[in-house]
Each structure stands twice: as C-alpha cells, then as structure tokens.
Length: 377
Image (cartoon, rainbow, N blue to C red; front, side, top):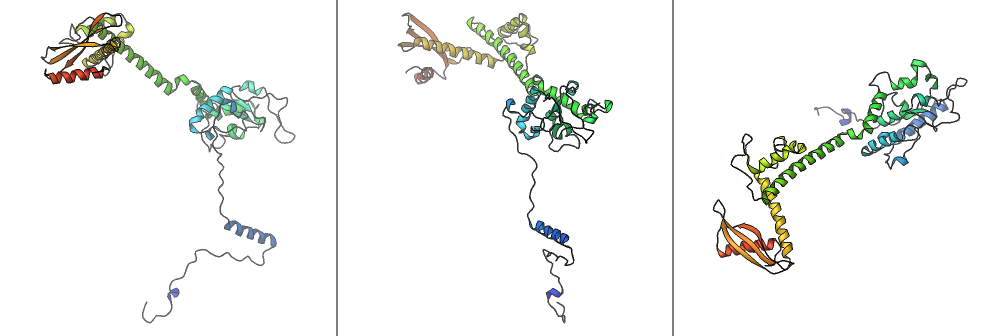
C-alpha cells in the first residue's frame, strides 16, 4: 500500500457476485406479463430434463414374431448389430405388406381427398407396402437397407413417416412412386435393390466363399497325404528301400518312393493335380521326415495288434544285438508265445537303439519298451 493512502481493500478491488439475484418485476407490468415472468423464474430453478428420443434395442426372436404393419414395426437399426442381417432376410422372405381392403381411407384437403389404389401393388409388387394403422405407403427394400438413426431430410418418408400424397401418384412422369425408385442406377432405392440381391445370395457371401475354399484345400491335402500313405504301405510290405542318393527334379531315377508316386499320378488325373510339382512347397508330404512319421504310425499299429494277440498269456523274449549300416548298436526284440488257437508264434516286436551292450543298458531299454506297450514286467 502506498504510504499516506487510506481505505480498505474493497476500495481497490470490487467483489464480483457468482450469481446475479433476480430482478424485481416492475410494479407497472400488467397481470399476464407478470404471470409469464414468474413462470420463467420457476423454470430457471428446475433442473434440465434429458429427452432421450432413441428407442430401446429390440431383440429378434424369429420370423413369426416380426411386426408386419409398416407403421408399427421397429427400424432395422433398433436391433442388435449381430441380428440385423437375420432381420433383413426375414422381412425379405415375408415380402411386402399389401392388404386388400374394400375401401382405403381418404386423405387430403376436404373436397380434394384421394385414396390409395390396390392396382398400384401390381405396378410396384416388390417393394410397395400399405399400413392399415397409419394408412400410408412404405418401401420394404428401403427399410431393409436403412442403417442410420438420423436419416437425411426426405430420405425417411417411405421408411419411417410414410407417404400419403396420393395426388402425385398418377402424375405421369412426376409420379411420386416412380420418383422414389429414381432414374439413375445409383439412387437410394436402386442401391437397396442391389443390397437385397446380396443378402439373399448367401452362397456368394465372403464367409461362405472362404469356407468353400478352405474345404477344397482340405480335400486336396487329404488326397495328397493318402497317396503318400499308400506308397509307404506298399514299399513297407514289399521290403523295398524308400530313397536314393539323387531325388532332384532333373534326376532320371528318383528311386522308389517318388517314382511310385509319379506312377500313380499317371493313372489318376485328380491325383496328378495335387502331388509332386503341383503341390505347395510347404505341404508336399514327401520329405524323409514325413516318410518316417507314416512308417512309425504303421509300426505302432502292428505292435498294438501283436499285443492284442498275446493278451494275458505267458510269453518269452528273444533279444539279439545287431548293427545298422552306420555301425550303431541296436537291440532286436522278438516275442514267442502261444496264441488263442494253441499255435506257437514268434513275432518281431521292436528294434531299439542302445548306447552300448552292457547288461544294465539292455535291461533298462527292455523294461522301458515293455512298460510302454502295456506289458507287466
């Protein structure tokens, strides 16, 4: 504060009111204006009310529960998004509502009233509808294609409000119903016609096309795998070698497995389309790993069959040591038993790789192979 000055802080700063008190009504105002002023003051004190004009969602319970009257039925966008296409197809399958009445209600100015004519259904059979509740005309196709809650001006006449200006129907080229259809291929009504065709053509939908392609791909893969399984089975039963030292595409002799596949393809055009050079790079089913996997499945089935033949009868084990071409130690396991018919049988059961021929190593491998196949050791 400057020296020598006097006064308090309110002399320098003026306090601002947060809420201006209401002005007193002029005493000279007439009674109607005074009542209006009091009503305005009461409305200012009341809390604003939210006017929610958007209706609640509607659930689709089935075609038989749909509202048929165009003026009473809910709009498509009122249904849950995952049900809207089903509702559209249901309305299209039911067709437009075209009641035949003895006399339609007249509308218009007095002395110039006109009525809906039943013969108009013959001119517009696929989309024109009539409501017995509102006595107005509607368009089924535009209802099916409607998506927006807030439609553009005039675009909701044949879907929400209805049309009843019958004077403009028979006005030749200015006919309101012809104007609704539009003269261009891209008019809203013609776009709705195209959408109807797409909805009814479920076989052409993307998910069905993709599913059909997936099914075709699965069938091709199965046929390709069946050919490889058949070749493995034949070579195994004939005790033939599978592979050779040169299996490249330019080789004149790709050895048994690939050559037998090529032979099958020569006599089966469907098979020739899916194997060898016509198969995808990542699913040829001809690699050594695939051959070994198929062979191991056959070996498991043979061992399971031997185990079923042996059952709970007593058996003896023949174990012998043998080496493969790579000089790796192997243990051959053979069962000797009496089958259900009373005949003595010997069955080669497994060939087990071992690190060495010590007794403890052989015992561990033997116990592991027996327990793995359900034998009581």
